[in-house]
Length: 90
Image (cartoon, rainbow, N blue to C red):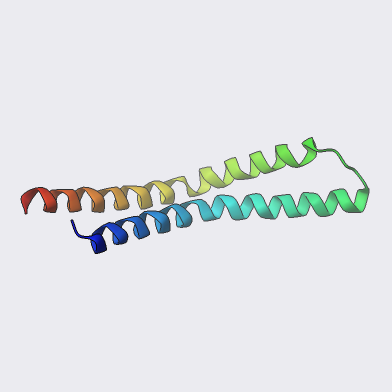
């Protein structure tokens, strides 16, 4: 396995991690922003107020995107296994 193949594999792994985690992180950030605006306008400074809605929103987002996330991870894993098979055969 050459240096170029290793770098390509690591780059693809990082891209898969970023693409798979993006919907969850974006929803968490959006809900956090909405809750922060609500807290600022109502002068409520309760720390636990941000935690529960974020957890619920991320959980619902995960349920919605679970099949896509699983499909993306399985495709990447198949590609890695095929690369391992090519290394073993060569």
